[in-house]
Length: 210
Image (tube, rainbow, N blue to C red; front, side, top):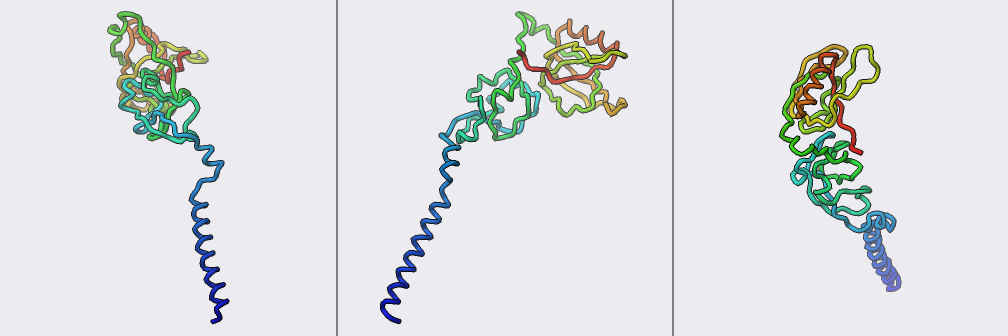
């Protein structure tokens, strides 16, 4: 083989090795637009595990932890401090490992008047529900009632804490009659008893506090 041919072959090999390394380096780097979207790392609170909608956050430190995420993965109004969660209620389910934002939370739980907290007591009622899966202990709920012949149901009690629920039994129309225990005041317990005597009751997740 001629010396010139060998020289050209060696140059081709070197250029091939250098080109391969440059290609690998370029492929391993995220595009400029992607790096710009990721932005600077941001420290936020993420759920330690999957959390159900309607859950009241009494001890958020047991349910959330701090985690650093790229800015591109942080939602608007992301929660960064535990005191932003205390006493709030999840408006939608939170997936484990995912950040939570202010838009995922209902308002601060209603603060009872002085001396009213001790007056709240467990009260059992029977509700007729098509699906009880969305209701879990510690959820904040409203109790609705509808008299026969009436249109839209009325709210009997707002912002009650769901303490416990029973499996229930079929009640017709695809619904189940389920016993539930709520923490309510004596006045609210009387209102529930009157409403239950007039027609079936049902639960709804409490609306945000304005």
